[in-house]
Each structure stands twice: as structure tokens, then as C-alpha cells.
Image (cartoon, rainbow, N blue to C red; front, top):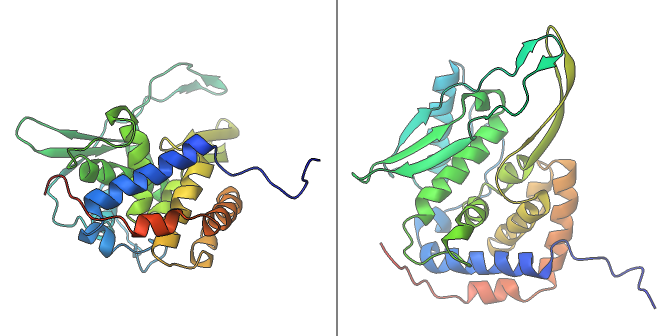
Length: 262
């Protein structure tokens, strides 16, 4: 008989196992570094991101410095650089150019002199949550690039593991809320709706990664729920409940720190 009260798990077995494997990989490589031992649940409040005034460039630089600090990577050397502006796809009222390439929200690269460059799309100045999520993602690239051991499934999964790492560093609320946005826009000539996607994981996957972080750090889920968008809030409650009935947290806590490269 079909059990009406047995709800479908938030993630597929494969996606859930991948998240567990990624947390295992992160804890083995970085579990005793300050970036994790001192990690807190970073919130969209003035405690973490004090109000500031200034140009878009100044706001980005200040925000990047704050994200580095909260990620425990304040002393990690890297250059922040704005990308070129995206092309304007509106050439006349109600006339939009299709199939125009846009710059990514952010990028991470290392040159032959071992100098790290992180870039960001200037349009992020319009969306502080997306900006913080993007910086957390790119700094997670920087951190995980120091592991000689590949992430679960190999380096082809690096982007997905990097998204999970952003939650591992405490930025789960930001990357989850930024995973998808659908909002109204209005300008002089037109109005309508626009959508945007940030990162590589779905809202449900980000919610599960955040729930793992909360459980590992013994942080009450209610501290995160009040700052989550509606979809994330629902997913996080489900993930938190599922993890509470699983043995994964105990298994992760019993892992031994085995850094591959200092």
C-alpha cells in the first residue's frame, strides 16, 4: 500500500552521496585549518557586512575583503578585478538582442607566476547577496585548488564541489538564496520579469549542504531559517530533518584530518 506519509527525499541517492563525499573530502583536507575551525554561519547582517557608501568598485573591494575575513582567508594573496561591462541587449523599447554572450558572475585563475586573480561581473553591484555568494564561490576555488587530491568524481566535478565548499566555509545562506532569482524589472521603456542563476547546484542541493554545515557545527537551524528565501526555508527544514535521522554527521565527525598539501 502506498504510504501517504512517507515523503520523497529532498535529493536523489546519488546527489546525497556526492554531498557526503564532498564534505568528507573537505574535512580531510581542511578540517583543522582556521577556515573551518573558526567558521561561523555568515549572515546578511551589519555584524558581518557593515553598511557602507561609495562607488560600485569600492563596495566590491570592501565586500571582498569582508568575505575573505569570514572565510578565514584574510591573508591569502590574490588580486580582485572587475570584468568588462556586459553588452546592453536592449537596443530600443521592447527590442532585445537575443543570444548575446554575458560575462560570468566571477572567475578564478592562477598564472605561471602563481599569482591568483579573481574577477567579478560589475552588475553584481546591483545584488549584494549574489556578490557575496560569488566571492565565496571563487575563494572556495582558491582553497580547494590547494588540494592535490581531486574532489569526488575527479576534477570535472570541481565546480560542484566548490559550491559545497562555500557552505563548508559558512556562506550557505548566500549561495542558497543566490541559486535562483526571479524578479520584476522596470525601466524607462519597458517592464517585465527576469531570472538569474548563480552557482552550479540547485536550491535543494544548496539547502542540503547548508544543513550539513549547521549539523556539524551544532548551530540551531532556526538561526539560518529567518534569513532564507521561501524555497530555501522549506528545503532546509526537510534536509535538516533527514540528516537528523541519518548517521552521516557522526561518520563525518570521526574522520581524521589528512591534509594532502600544506
